[in-house]
Amino acid sequence: MKEKLYDYLVNNNSQVGVLKTVEILLFTVLVAAIIFFTYRYTYIGVMYNRKFNVSLVMLCVITAMVMIVIGSNIALSLGMVGALSIVRFRTAIKDSRDTMYIFWSICAGICCGTQSYMIALIGTIFLALIAIFFSFGKFGYESRYVLIIRATRNHEEEIMQTIFQTFKDSQMKAKNTRENQLELVYQIQLKRSDDKGIVQKLYDIDGVNTVNLVAQNGETIG
Image 1 (tube, helix red, strand yellow):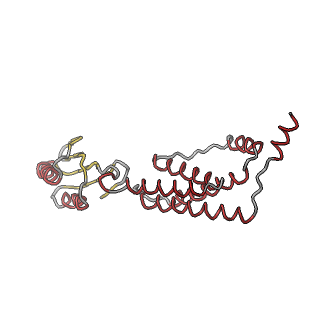
Image 2 (image 1 turned 120 degrees about the horizontal axis):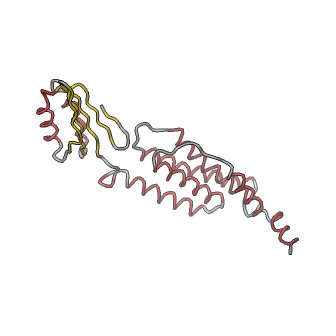
Image 3 (image 1 turned 90 degrees about the horizontal axis):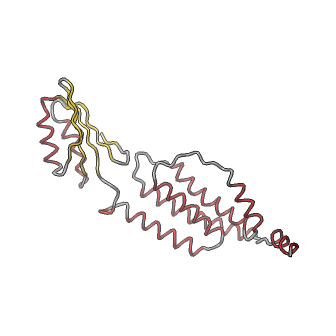
């Protein structure tokens, strides 16, 4: 019994030839390219990080390579788990969507590495359509902004009237005053593309020194 178990653990290998390996890796790159362009198209942050997007492609290919090596070799798979358990990833993921893309790349690499091409392709296209669908229209990401205005106090009424006329549902969150200086903090929602012209409207008012329009995702305009 022990000899049979030892023979199974040591000799049960799935041999993958050169052509099959190339086939798997090429298909993995194809799937990873879909992930790459989906991330690029749906990205809405302050600064697009191309290095992170390229790393998603590399992660997908690396995962496929690991799955090719492991195959059905249980002993090798256990050793690989032990080796990977000592790896520590110190990079903090600030956006939850980035975490989703990392898991997406890993799962796609696993599917490709095990030659489950149909699952990898259909799953990747399905996830890409979901990501694109929720990235625009009324299902898009949050469009609420924090509007911060610094100006002289004698123009307070004119500033407040301009904001109210432009955004009926605006909410004042803070009002700070010091001598002749005034700071107003509003929460607004941009519903039209031309709403961002509020920055120029406010600058046209005499006494306005600084206007900042900050999105909840960290994007700054003005």
